Image (cartoon, rainbow, N blue to C red; front, top):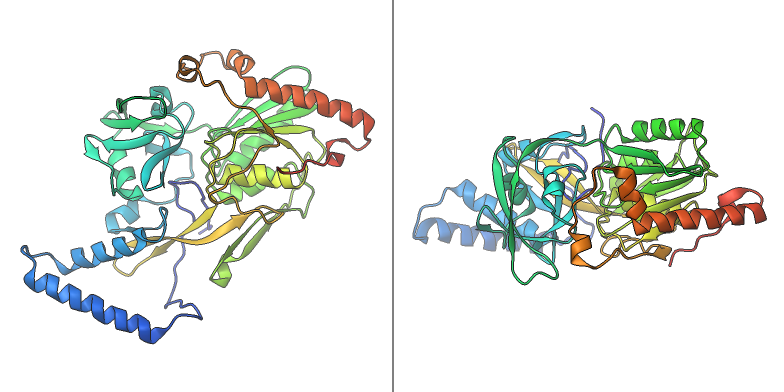
Length: 413
């Protein structure tokens, strides 16, 4: 079975079967077993003296959940039912609302609604804090539990209570669940030889879709590209690498990971059969650009292959491994962090654009529903228009510096 890396807030990263135990060289076995003795002592007292009788498995599961909860927001325990549900969702078709969430400062937070899904149409936005799901408080709720509550049969409804910056009180969003089918790539001709490519999510088919869109644009006279990764919450690491290698020379490092266990230390380089290494391009990012999007933007920025325009990205730069357990349950454990080619850790920091362009703060503009005419929407988009201006400037530089944009040094801020 092909192994797939997934680095978005809700998607599974890697399925591994680990035999035996893995211990750190610095682990004091004696001290560990001494603490385990304390745990069994507490377990025995609870079993014998707690006011209600609790099945031993429930106690053990609760203890494991507490252990993982104390590590980081992305590590969690999956009971057998949750483990079956949290399989890799990379085909582009799944049930739910079409929203990516994470825990930020212990609050359930929207990373990004996926364009065209119920959550997007309802008006949910990056940074929204979900305080209730169907009236149930999300305080102390694990990510996997929140996901389970928001999923359901297509046609059924769920009410999300949201707190947003600038609002005086929470608001309810009643959203009807759908079978989510995400079209990963959308392309437009912006005129003047400038192609526009919107990548909504990194799925299995995304590299092929991007390659096809680029080939079509090239035949139509593409001379420059705007790659839009705004509100792209991530997806497959392998897809991110394959998309990046469309724009870099063969052998260029795209991303590497580092962890405590040797097999978590990996390097991913470009192995492109056909690419556009000299195509002038701008990458658009915002707070909703996370994980895989940050890998692509960071790599292209590090190699001076693109100018990054927009606002600071989300800052999700850790890798989770799904480890199956003997009773059908599993661990979703943070095992590594990823780094850009120049060694920048994105986790908790994000990618800083070369050119910062803020979107309007006016609530009326911010909450406006998108137009049915995509090109009309792009003409009103100040970040897209700034990207076009940047490309025009790059063309002038190209005339002055033979060799194209590959000769233009873009230094990360």
